[in-house]
Image 1 (tube, one colour):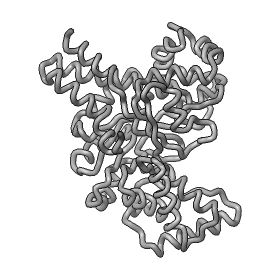
Image 2 (cartoon, rainbow, N blue to C red):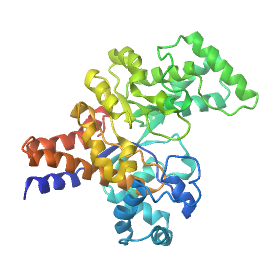
Image 3 (tube, helix red, strand yellow):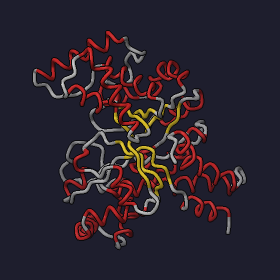
Image 4 (cartoon, helix red, strand yellow):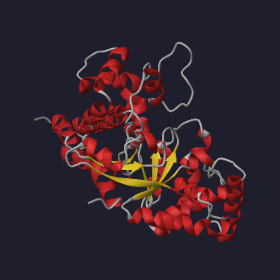
Length: 382
């Protein structure tokens, strides 16, 4: 067996730790909704255009179609076959085919229509396991919805977060990127400042406003609640839906927070990062508490994901990188995340082996490190 084939075989055998993922949809999808769920935009496609005409659309027709017993099919043929099989069978085939050993599931978004962690593990079958990642804003919004006043807000958030961790959750996540961006004062706020901000939120909720945490003081408080929890803190970075302003979510804007949090030892996990994956790699290079992935961008770059993965291996230390799909909704995204990542890593590292720059053993070791071992250690998975 040549070195490239051996590396591909080693990659295919990895039981990946998908350290940031959402549940698969358990409901049928018509064409319009399927097309909306394979892109990040919350807008309908421009008239006459299809989201299948994209890297991710082509990747679905190339890599997912064979799992559903199709070859070289059109979008209509693919979706008809998907409908015939039904969501349960589609989820079973694609989730089991992803070869994931652990799903670490962010349960804080659209949970009513998505498989919960235990159901994700069951659909994948075999020895796959799943745990929860607690979305900090969701905990805070639950507390506000339940009527906690400003004085009780912080303690109640901490209590509920601890309860979720004791129940088996293995990490926390902040969506500060979507709520106010990173260009705020992220130093630890005083208890009085948190109580004042929580009081304003409580008054707005009582007046009938939607329950949504976006106050910079509360967002900073939640970041520090995540740090104090002592489990990995995930932070969405870069590419995402229309709630964020891309220039405000460059991870370099988090430098002061990273430095202030460094003594805690809590790992800060920068998610997705595109197009700021080089900035994320720099931060991981400099600060021992920073880790990163290229997550959802692997799916959306499709055939170009090889370049993205290669760039992530520039200055970012290999032991500071982890795998995630950030898949949400159609199980195609969970499957593609795995397939495209394995192919991209195999291609990039395989070229370096073929050029004599890396040993086959070193390439296989780095693949295991990024795909499985670092996340297993950080999240204390058993």
